[in-house]
Amino acid sequence: MGGGATPEKIVKAFKLVSSDEKVKVILVNIFAGINRCDWVAEGIVQALQTIKIDMPLIIRLAGTNVEKGNKILKESNINYIEAHSLKEAAAKAVEALKKVEVK
Image (cartoon, rainbow, N blue to C red; front, side):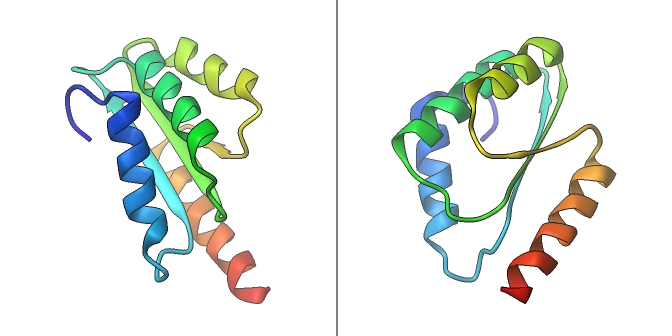
């Protein structure tokens, strides 16, 4: 999403990714520098209030205002899997994919 990740851009990105039937898991990895984690988290929450994601969602935030961003996500009641590193996020995405493939 790069700089200026507005809720509208995040909605567009989620719609694009989730519309591909080959996509089974979404991993959001944000290292906030230009954007702040709290802004990105707010955008993710607003996006998921607009569209429904029917697949596992793994979110990893790092960088500016990460604590605020994680708090926003936790308090939002959106369905996601939290990760604290890219390695952990990737492992959780693979684990979620295995569960999806079993169904």
